[in-house]
Length: 222
Image (cartoon, rainbow, N blue to C red; front, side, top):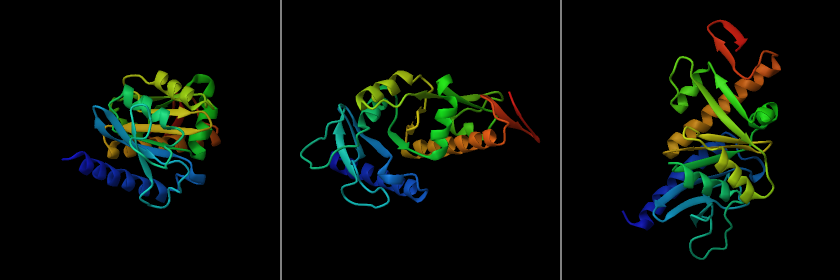
């Protein structure tokens, strides 16, 4: 497959994911961004063009950038301001697709658990979406501060990544997830949004803790 054919294929793959995310109303106020790896050596990836209405599909939705997040070739489009976050994820992980959204629930979670620097989900079926199948398994998602300097934010996300990290929350900013395929990244995002919504509802019911769990017919905290 030629580079042009590969680029076209990845473009369509990312556009399809964007349409699904838009249908969930995950792009309020032009927020959010997404990317997909195109080549490995040198590293290039498609990333959202800045300031676009992601509810619409156009031929200017994405920009091809290099390993520094700089556009490849001449273009009047600007890559998403948060491209540095994607750069660090592609450098440090096996990610082939990264998705970033802002929702009320994931923002509330970052406020509730900012002091701990992470949120831990335990005893909830949806952590299996991250390949966690153990009886007492848990999913730990780091929370980093929302630095206005986006290069600094990218570095902060990079510093939070460990071998098993598949998502990072940014305080009062949103969540970035990734996967080895676009499908896996989308699966991680759907599962984590469910988990954030679940945890927020537990807090509203006054039964939440850092390791809140639901087991059988009993709701409690661990």
